[in-house]
Every structure is written in structure tokens, then in C-alpha cells.
Length: 211
Image 1 (cartoon, helix red, strand yellow):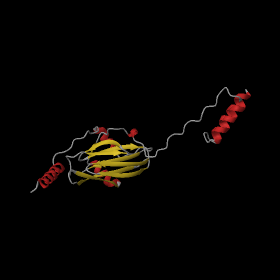
Image 2: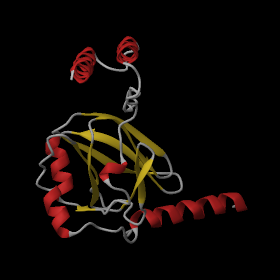
Image 3: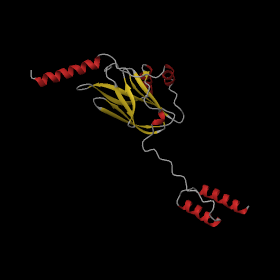
Image 4: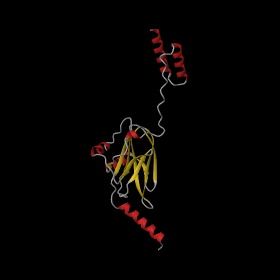
């Protein structure tokens, strides 16, 4: 048997050993946090996402998980992540021998469940992310333990989230009444302020100069 074949078989054998032997260790959340997450009560203004791995297959291999390119940490057998995020579009990735991606459109006040399925790889374990229904997702989470994420929920934002518009430039208090009215009119024409804001600010100016 030539050397290349022997090396290939040895590497494959090592991969099989890793798939079936031992159990990876990951930092776990407190039991109180785990219990609360398993109540499955989403916040009214947030989307509740569970990313779980409930298989013993490949238990020795930790698998990294990221959301919108922010790493949550690594999973082990019978573990899960739970995040509460602002509604919108998110991309979940599982990084192993391969990279599995799943895009989610999340609504407020709802639970979402993502199964990190473990698969056989060439040299190590692979994974595949799947969105599953609530019944299957709850069952998988209930038999698992929550992982302490490396980032907080507030570190995550939906892709394409709009940025707040800059505040309108202030009107100089030293400008004349007519100049301030012109400035206000320019702000309205440039859509820097709404019609309602324009009317309130104009009324305030009129009242100020009538005193």
C-alpha cells in the first residue's frame, strides 16, 4: 500500500474517532437562564431564536455558530443558543469542515428554531442548518442545555437596518424673524423636517416675536 493511501486512511480513521469519541466542552449558561429560555415566551418587540444541536453524533467536535458574521460561540452535543433580536433579516452560519448558511426573516413576538444537524465529513464532522417547526424545535431544545454566548443580544442587528436620519440644523437665535422663517421653509423643502414639525416651529417663532 503506498504512503499516500496509508496517510489518507489514517486521517479518515482519526476523523471517525473524533466523530464518536468523547464530548466537547462549551461554557454553559446558568440553570436559571436555561430554565427561563425553555419557557418559550418571546418578548413582544423581539424575535426569539433557538439554534440547537441535539445529537450525540460528532460529540467530540465543537461547531462554531455565527449570526450576521458575529460569532456566538461553539456548540457541543445536546446544547443550544438562545438569542432575542430586533426583527428583520439575519444570516446564521455553522462553521465546521463546511460552512452551512441559513437566511431568516424574523418577526417580533415569535419563536424560531434552527437545527444544527451533524453530518459525516471527509476528515471531520460537517453540519447543515435547517429551520424546523415549533414542535420539533421545542423538543430538541428541551433535551439540550443553553450555551453562554460570547456576545449579547444587543450586539446583533438585522442586515440592512436603516440608520437614523441626521437631526435638522438648528435655526440661529440671532437671525431675524424673516430669516428664521426662510430657514424653516428651506428645511421643509429639503424634507429635513415634516410639515407638522414645520407648522409647530413656525407657530413658535410667531408667538416669540409677538411678545
